[in-house]
Length: 180
Image (cartoon, rainbow, N blue to C red; front, side, top):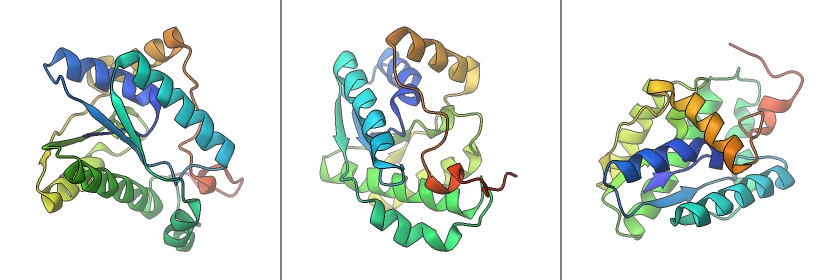
């Protein structure tokens, strides 16, 4: 099970997993943390395009932003890369692991580690916890290594993929959003 945060970030992981002999990759897209809804739809459409092109199945969780807000609203004033981001990563990885178990997956991996803006240590810890809790093997991959992020930019451009300019969280778009 490959947790996919967005199509551009999935380009390199899909390529590299296939090149590494993983022939049955199932993607999982959470998305309830993405706002507004038209932004969610653009990202979902880009992922559908990529999935069809790459010949993989992608499971898309129901878009339920009210559940995201119920969990994250108390963290609205947190700085970027703070506790709100940790919650977001944990929710996404737990959901992917749970769906993986329901679908018979044996391994869990995420595209989140391709971004140079995210804490890979935190993501790896949360992914390992989610995998362990659900009895999956965690694939600890740091996709941004070896120019992974640059490769994803080039691949996304070549494919004409929609590339967003923020993580998706409404709180990260507000003028009062604090930066670490």
